[in-house]
Length: 135
Image (cartoon, rainbow, N blue to C red):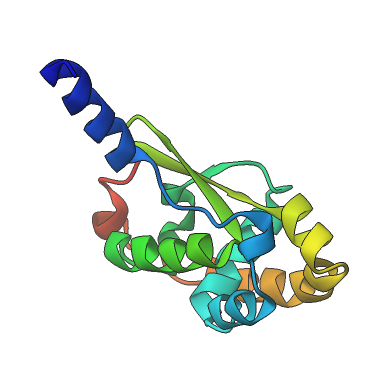
């Protein structure tokens, strides 16, 4: 194999993120991921945004970049969200169709609590200095 092609393939593999296949998503993992207030609020942000893709910076009121990265990884590994790299950003979307097929009615039942968790963070004071470099 050409060395340049091998390096490119390693780069692409490194850039791809693990997302469980629908049949690998387990309710226990989803419940564990959403048992955290911050991750529940992230779900609420996505639900309130009509489940369109959101950049990581949209969650800035929920914590530091490091903390958000950790929480997004937990949601992604549980199968709750899809994280799509786009340049230097990560775009996050809810895997509603997959979750609705695996666990009918689950998201509908938890969404009001998730939106309420997001609303609790909406009133938090924004630290402009801490978030100035986002996006």
